Length: 239
Ligand code: GLP
Image (cartoon, rainbow, N blue to C red; front, side):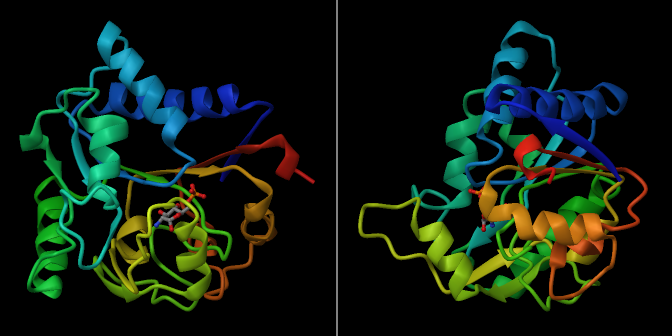
């Protein structure tokens, strides 16, 4: 586990983008799982800039989303699919044939989860999982107590996560009760993991990771022992 401490939002975005770009340089056809939330927006901005100048070649990579709200069509502006289109995929003109996003409104959510796993497996598994962190230690939508051996599956969201995510919507939208998420088993198998952590709300979860004791009450601790885990975090969280 390699920690990289950053002193400004610019440096945070820059370091995250640089690590991810290094993976793509090594593996141009990398299968990459993408996060949503406020944390990765700066990284996406930098990718978009660099894709435009040719500094990073994103056109052979394969992209997947980590998670999605259950019940929402991709076209719904509140969906994670719409978020990824808005912040990254459309702006970087990523070929839709190289993108697989979960369908939160699929009539058979278990079937949809299995299809996501099959699409990742068809690329030989994940080469890079880019992750944010929930204040309760969740990664993607793997909440405290989650099974650490699962692939993509449906999950009930905790009240803490629903409240945290509600803050992004001021238009009367109510955060759904369930989500679809890549499971911890799948994320742990990613060849490389880039965990992005910013904001004091994440301090306790990050401290649990740094303590080095795997604990199912803190899903992020499932990453302890991963052979290629890089954590880019705010210096303010260094303690
Ligand atoms: C959501 C997402 C996670 C994300 C987390 C943190 O719950 N499902 O994948 O990491 O929020 O979001 P933020 O970066 O906005 O703090």
